[in-house]
Image 1 (cartoon, rainbow, N blue to C red):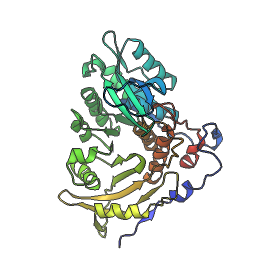
Image 2: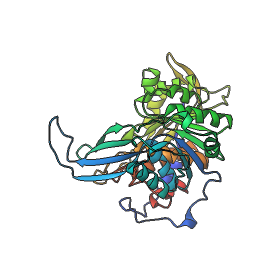
Image 3: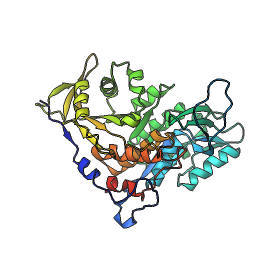
Image 4: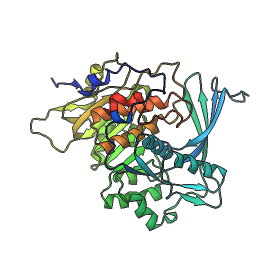
Length: 394
């Protein structure tokens, strides 16, 4: 029987009880924090927008007229949210994107700069409009609906000078691509690959040009529906095997599942002769049985090194991980906008810190859960000194 075990980190993660998750007033002293990563420069190519967040008692029916319970206007966009998360965790983010020289565009840049994001490679168009998104936050179901208007004119590779490209990539530890402005992203990814800068690609949904970016990726983080939509595999675990089979450069792929946590498949290049082969769907079920649902904070269980088989797909040697999400009390859960972006921001920190998966997945889940305790993608993003992160950073 294949032996399965909780990660060594799980016990230590359950121990902190001296602070309340309801309060953001608790802060760790800087002396108790581990040192920042030696190389903490992260570069992203992607979108930044203005979010108009309207909270409502419940989602309206067609032709309804309702009132908001609250309204918030703040910056958004996958890349912008993830970089602000990374900045608050102590990294030094840089952004390649495009906005217009309008009120919204200027506001977008000012907000990013205030949180420490380097926007010197952001292109500012003298004409057109900056991108924006209307977000309806349903207080009843705790869900959000996004209605996006792209910026104009769109970013194209010729917008980015060779000097700006070289400067943006100089010293970068990792490149994050959110899958948008794909032509420019491909140009930057090709240069990053030439310079041996690792690349993390987000698979939120199938987009034009995403396949070309995934071929260059070292890491992939996917939304719940993406793996099966992209691979046409029969199950999520089989889809993760398919991704690693089809993309031989990928070191790990993570699929985020909201309140159900996440699943990660990590490739191993060191397959021992005695490595056991097992069906990946069966292995996932065994791992789920090993989860301890008594823990409110995120934990992780993993398999030993295994030759994972997906019927009709192939095999890959690696480890499968199941990460749990924090059980956020309903009274504290405000808005899931940006939860996936904050998860990615935390993974960027983990990559720069060389965190093992056993520590990375609970850490990223905790950051995402903290984000969900406030309305908007950025309001609740924790700083590195937030005591709720103490046990994950120690």
